[in-house]
Length: 531
Image (cartoon, rainbow, N blue to C red):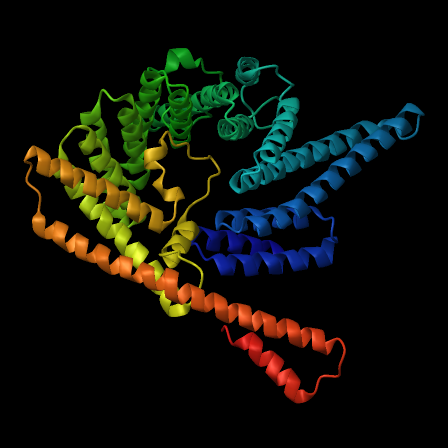
C-alpha cells in the first residue's frame, strides 16, 4: 500500500497537484515507519521525495527538514553495512564461515554500494536547497561530498579526461562493479555545474569556469552517445533487424560530425560559461557560447519558448555592455519582448524589465522617440503594480508595499526547479527585478523625462497626449504616496504604539493582581483592534 501511494504521488507531482502529493507521501511515510521503523530504507526514500517536492514549490526550509532526516538515515545505513563488512571479514580470517563468507561479502558490498549512491543523491539535493537559500559554502560542501562518492565508485579518476577513458573502456555498463555508468556521468556533470554556480556567486570565476568546462565535456559526451544510439536504432528499424544490439564501444570522434552536444542541459552550461566570460570581460567568447546555447534551445523548444526569451535577453545585456553592437542588442530585446508578451502577458514584470532595457538601448543610440515609447509602456506596467501596492497599504493599513503577490506565488509554484542555476550576464541597469516597485517606477519616470526632454531638443516627434496622460497618473500616484507616508502610516503607527502600551500595562498589572473576567475580555479586545 505504501509503495502504491508513493507511485500515485509521483503521478500527481507531474500534474502539479502539490497538496495531494504531500498528503500521499506523508501517508506512505507513516506506513513505512510502522513496518520498517525510523531507520528503514523506504523511510529515507520517502523523506527524500518530500524534500524534493517541497523544494520544487519553494518551501526550502521545510524541504531541508525532510532532507536532513533522509541523510541521517543514509549515513546510518552506510555505517551499518561498513560495520557488517568489517565483522564478516574478521570472521572469515579466523576460519569461521570460510565457504559462505565470499558470497555474503558480495551481497554486503552491493548493499553498501547502493546505500552510498543513495547518500550521494541526498547530499546533492541538500546542496541544491542550500544553493537556493544562498548558503553557498554549505552547498559547495554538499556537492563536493557527492562528487567524492561518485568518483570513488568510478575508480577514483584524477580528472574528467581519465573518467571518460574509464567510461569508454568499460563499455558504459550499468552494473555496479564494471565501472562508471551513464547515470554516474550525468550526475557528476550536474554536480560540477552546480559547483560552478557556487563559485560564480562567490566571485571565484576561475574555479567556476573550470567546473563548467568539465561539466560541458561530460554532457557533450553523453549527448553524442545518445545521438549514436538513436542513429543505431533508426538503422536497425530501417533494415528490419531483430537480433541483439551491437554492444561494441563507439569512438565518438568518428561517429559525430558536430563538435558539441545538443541537449537543453548542455545549453544551460553553455550559458553559464558565457556568463563567466562576461564577468571576465571576454565578451566575444561569451557571445559565442550564448549563440550556440540559443541555437540548441530553439531547435528543442521552438522560437516562442520563454527559455529562449531569457537567452535573448541575456544576449541583449551582453551586447549592450560592449557598446559597439546596439542594433543587435535592440533586436535581441525586441524578440525577447515579443515572446514574453506572448507567454506572460503585456502586464508582467519581466515585460517591464525588457521595455526598460530596450528604451535604454534606444536612448544610447539617440533614437529618443522610440525610447519614449518604450519607457511610456514601461511606466504603465510599473505604475499599475505600484498603485496596487499603494492601495493595499491604504485600504488594509499594512506596512507592506508589495504588489502582485498572488502573481509571484503563482510563478514560484509553476516554476520547475531543476537546480541548474540560471546565470545572468546582466549589469546594474537591467537588475531592476531586485528592487521594489516604487524604486522601479521612479527610475523609469526619470528615464522617460530625460528622453522626452532630449526628443524635444532634437526635434523628434513625441505623442503629447500620451505624455499628458502619464503626467496625470504620476500626479495621482504622488497624492496616494502623500496619503500613505504622511497620514495613514503615522496614524497606523500611533494606534499600534497605543495598543502596545496598553497591552504592556495590562501585562504588568496581571503579574501583580488577579484578573477578572471583564479584564480578560478587555485584554483580548486590545489584541483584536489591529485586525
